[in-house]
Length: 148
Image (cartoon, rainbow, N blue to C red; front, side):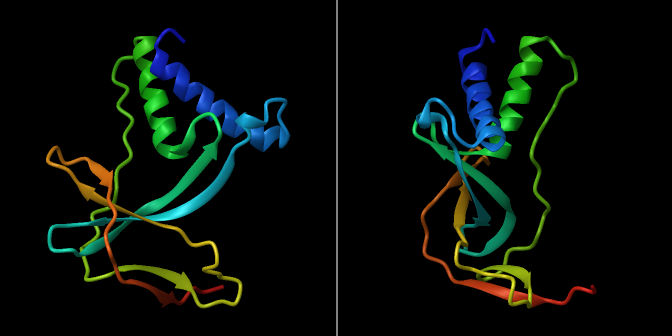
């Protein structure tokens, strides 16, 4: 790839795929660990709404990065490099209402565990972009009934 940023994104995704495919890599700095996190937006009134589940990858070369965002940015760069017209890839979030605490629904099941539950909070900047932000919050897991 001729664009340096696009090449960086390609290498990040290559490390994720190669780790998944092979497990052990010749260069151990490329080995990626994955974890998931629940992402929330909070507004000026310190109300919260669920955005998405994120897949976070981390290795010694690139540090931590969100896989979905990396993929979208890479597709955009690839499209520009190959002059693909009309390519507009974006991650959109459902317009859920804001509530007084960060909350999600989860099955009432002994198989559901919160041991490795990670949360990430975002706030919109002046340009309307979501940026990670550290804020105190109350979190609740609400039971959900699912038909088998």
